[in-house]
Image 1: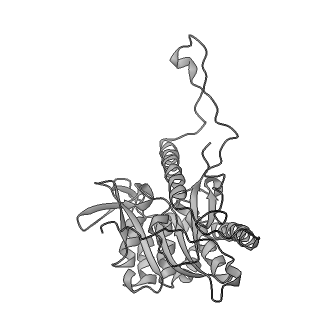
Image 2 (image 1 turned 90 degrees about the horizontal axis):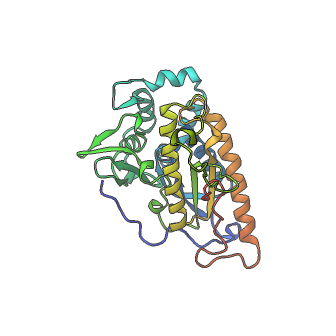
Image 3 (image 1 turned 90 degrees about the vertical axis):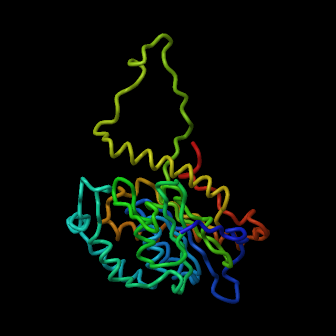
Length: 322
């Protein structure tokens, strides 16, 4: 699919949503992050419980999976299934294939997703949905706004090195988080607020240290010992997270949401898919905190913004540059 450009500004002026004559409408941008993306389930649950009508979802990677299931009305069935999975169950579902383009074929997982979703198409969903994938040959992001939901999800979740990429329309497609880890630009207009859930945050140090070395020291004497047990896969993962965090900062600056929910990187490991219940609970707690701040802020005199001023959240410290 060729990338689509969303018309107008993503963000909607903040207002006291509790006094609207109808259910306040929300659009949601859901990021990637592996198993931490299960927090999206909790965020969506809280939004519904607090009376918000979710009218649009854009997601990449796990955000595309959770968002697509929600838009189709099938998230509850999927959530019930994954919350019952043990660590051993997950290992069996991974369908490991070390010699394949991705170490995890995950065919059993996607077979279950196909069973839940069936052959529903994006353009027929009751909630507007956009899945973001990456064209590995051109380095461009691709937006899915039509076609089978399962195909869009499968393309968006293919994390390089982990899950095998797919070829669709002659394009080699993989994880949308490579180019757009928080797809705020892909959210639709016409809502009362925009909610973003970023799951690639990292704690910043108190101050950026300045690296100094002794005068005349040899190069081999300057460096310190590597962390114990550091492996190549961990280095690759940390590198990917660093790049994602930089892109997320840019997305937040360009399309500031009304509500920002940040799931810290330390919440769990990327492949801890047996922790769905724990991550869902974390998402619920973080969503309650973020919405409380937003609604309290909007109810204060002089805090209604006409163009993205006072009503916007401060960038979470997990995403602020160090």
